[in-house]
Length: 76
Image 1: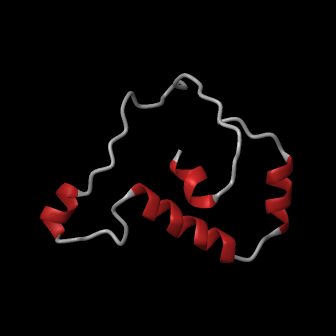
Image 2: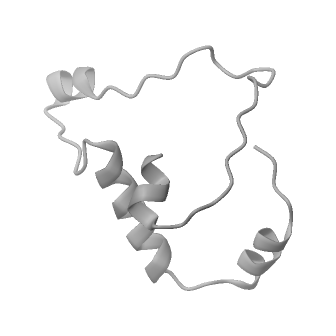
């Protein structure tokens, strides 16, 4: 898993079926946006995107709500 590789954090993963309202397929393709507007993403590979997000998360100030969220058991 790319997230574990980039962050070095070994967290449990639980695979579940789709939830009501989830789309059958997700596609991340900036091709149309590139062609129409000339926009180029700063990161166009999954590991680069995760790395950038992880670096931001490590640097941002932590808020009291962060501790509360970590203590709750969140199911995705």
